[in-house]
Length: 140
Image (cartoon, rainbow, N blue to C red; front, side, top):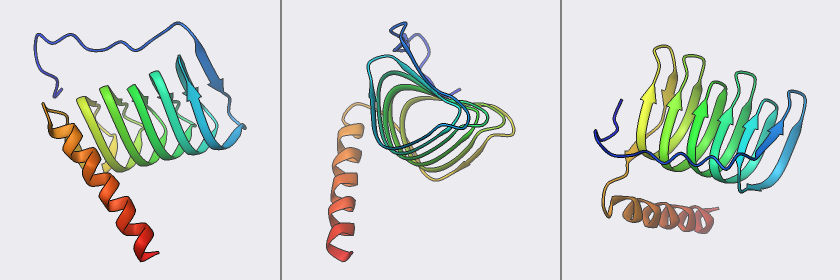
């Protein structure tokens, strides 16, 4: 929807899949070289060097850094997506997102701010987020 025409999108898939089934709950940090599919719940930080998929029954809360993200379930937090974010009609997103490309199906819910990556802009946004986080620590 908001991607630049003629630009090749990052695929991010390595052929390896980490699967968190419905009924599975993870708290803490999750790091994967390949794709991650969440049909259960994750609370914490996810670093995915491929595609993060949040299934229809999936719930992710926290900080996400990934190449691509597809959401059909719920996400609450902040995400830095170097490639494409695709929100399916059942998706519910609450948080701030930094993305290179965005595709939103009718019916998807998105509450928060979306920053589209441009030359130099992403770095400024990440620096700003770091400053906000330090400010919150001082106030807390």
